Length: 375
Ligand code: NAD
Image 1 (cartoon, rainbow, N blue to C red):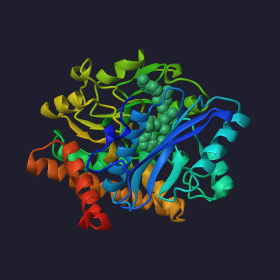
Image 2: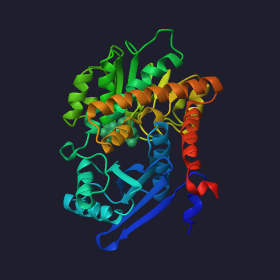
Image 3: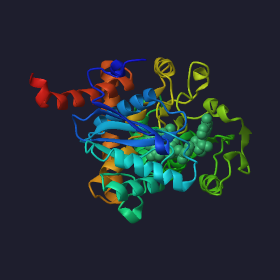
């Protein structure tokens, strides 16, 4: 049996809480990673194959994301070992029981993640009146995916990053060729915001396959297809390929917005873009990111580029409205992207190392103000 303290390093985790209620088959783990900057924000992930290791990694990445975004929040995460597609009544019972078990942890603010949604957050709020983000609009929430909070940040990260990559002087969003892997909440909204700037979407992929057209795909037509529950491969026009072919599409900007580790040692050489802006969490393996950096491909790391969602959640927590949240996302993501890329250029380090320095310096400074740090 491995020791639970095997996860500990100089930043955390501050607490690991096991929730176990055998009568209703509730099995969950909450990891509160670091709360030096404020109460931890982090989603509740429900899947049959979650693990404590995954929960740890995700909680740490929330610490980094919140600190890099300059939010007065730490990082945390909950995993629930269950099938999210279970009957609704059972799911409600499980979520309410989880909420009741965690009611005495005010240093953790819950939110939605894979397998949970705004309805689950409304049940939690009703059950324990705890701080929750990602609520339905009718319960005072901001619909993060509908307004495209994360994609809005990605659009701005791209605009700031373009002058830093190997493009001709003056190359901007208009006429840039974009390929997007994953055409869900993040991918679709990114396509919409970029098309508004006259960028050309040349490639798109979902779990069923990918489509390419050098002349440009019709973004509205693709969105309508997805909203009708269809796949991008049902788009009339363009050339169809298998799902992973999108990695090698000819384009200037490549946006992963699907799964982790999609660019790895096996396919990193195929990537042709000059700029990769990470919409998904950890979409590139460490080796792939390093390889692309050495080849001169600029990669804006996930916890800088995709922080729009958590910034929106923090704004909701403060009672702000949608337009205020979008304004803050734009400002924070632009500033952070610029700061990280400048530091990367000046110190000749990868953007990820620059982003880690930015986030960890803030966390360590906040930790130094804590009472225990003087003993
Ligand atoms: P989503 O479920 O709405 O959409 C995911 C899309 O990816 C779907 O179109 C699906 O068909 C496609 N897909 C799945 N596997 C694929 C594969 N192997 N290749 C190509 N396409 C594939 O999810 P989302 O909310 O858009 O999130 C996408 C990613 O961004 C996830 O990694 C998520 O963790 C991350 N993220 C999301 C937010 C947010 O605000 N929603 C914030 C930060 C990070």
